Length: 121
Image (cartoon, rainbow, N blue to C red):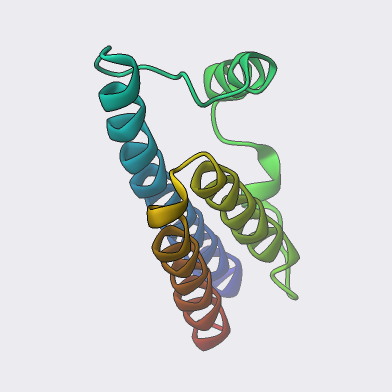
């Protein structure tokens, strides 16, 4: 049982890292969207369908998959891949002068997160 508690803790830490990476990317995009639209906190770059889906997921709370025993840590890898994809999509919305640096930062965040996942095994 001790192993499963440690595993759950590692999963939550991984999920928090993914959430923080996504939050950082979101803050960057939101601040740029605010500058472009003149509206603070604007979700101008978020697809309305995706925004509704995200709101529904947030309302449901943590997904059960975060608490399942996942010896290969596939869930964490999928979550990190999804966070990378979201960050890259946000980068594609930026002006071309800023896009390369944004993509490099997104990739660096993903590499750091996956390295932490590997070291926690």
